[in-house]
Length: 294
Image (tube, rainbow, N blue to C red; front, top):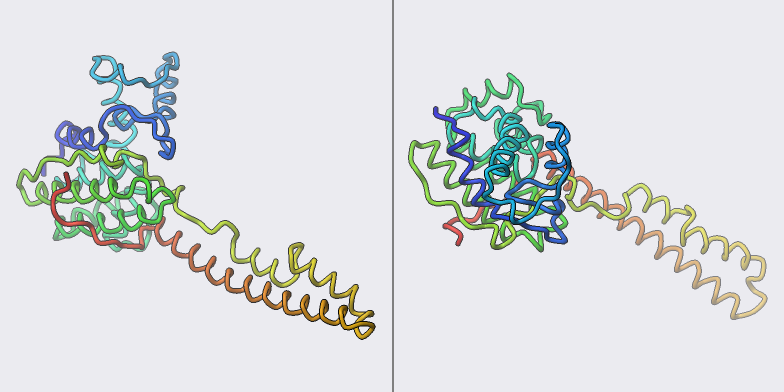
């Protein structure tokens, strides 16, 4: 086992590329994987003045020192990188940079089949990891769960190709390291959106929860309530004219349609909410692409 921060860094930096500020990237302004919010916090903690991330900072000695320090403090130390088996260290490190250490550890804990999945890499998780007989298979399982969540993100349509390529590339290299080999070169996934941040907070959720949709359909302060009110006003007049009767019948049918529609939406909403939670918890899996991406 030879975990090495300096060995992993070039792989991550290849995935992250340089400066980016895509309007749909939840990370916003990013330089080599460091987002502005993280950089601001780092500078504040060091007692340094705030400054914006810019493309021309790249490759300057000051930036390289800050960038490496941030990577070590914010991600590598958070996943206890110096204590991880080779290969697992790379994959967990990349997952932490892309989706946050908490989410990365949850994928590891699910892959280890632990009862407690809390996103905290404690002694129980470390013991289970080092006792695992097949780190190659463990990395594959983590990759599948990672991609399973990414596919549920609101921005999958924009960055999905790059994320899938990133997970696949990192999986291949990490598995090679776990087997004592060198592995392929990292893919330039930043060219196809693979550098965008992939946070669990961006998992697609229904616009209205199931409880509210049922309430609305059954007479809450929504369309159903308005329809019921109109029916109550017309009820005494039913029989007075054919037109009133037709209107009352139409309102009754419309109330039924609204109720059925709300119930159907409630079922769909509950299913989607449950699927979203499963994605965040690391329960969903997806097939990781084979073959080396460009």
